[in-house]
Amino acid sequence: DALFEITRKGLGLVIVAGADDEIQGVFTDGDLRRTLDAGHSLDGLTIGEAMTTGGHTAQPDWLAVEALETMETRRINALPVTDAGNRLVGVINMHDLLRAGVA
Image (cartoon, rainbow, N blue to C red; front, side, top):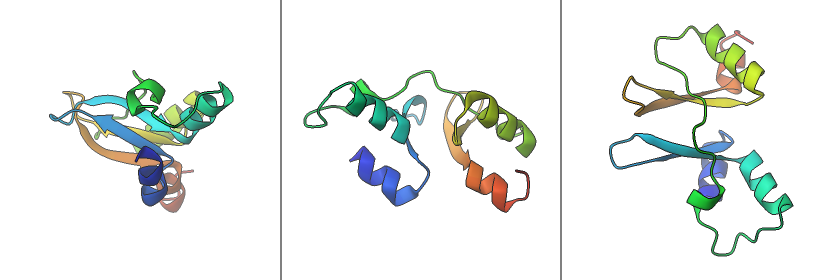
């Protein structure tokens, strides 16, 4: 299901959130590659077993350049945007920044 969502959204990641929208982790195309490289089968593998927990996020009041610097420093292509309660409010990715002329 997560792979289909990654493809459908085109962001390169799926954000895993609880019922209160608090982020529990992210599953990226990189997580998929690392999972397969480690020899794990996708058959029966849960998202909780493959996702990255404790990932990086951006805040809604950040300047776009701050998100870009975080992505460049962390070598990632997208950031979940969270409020003060760590609840998901959106996602920003490198393509957004390119379209806006930031990158």
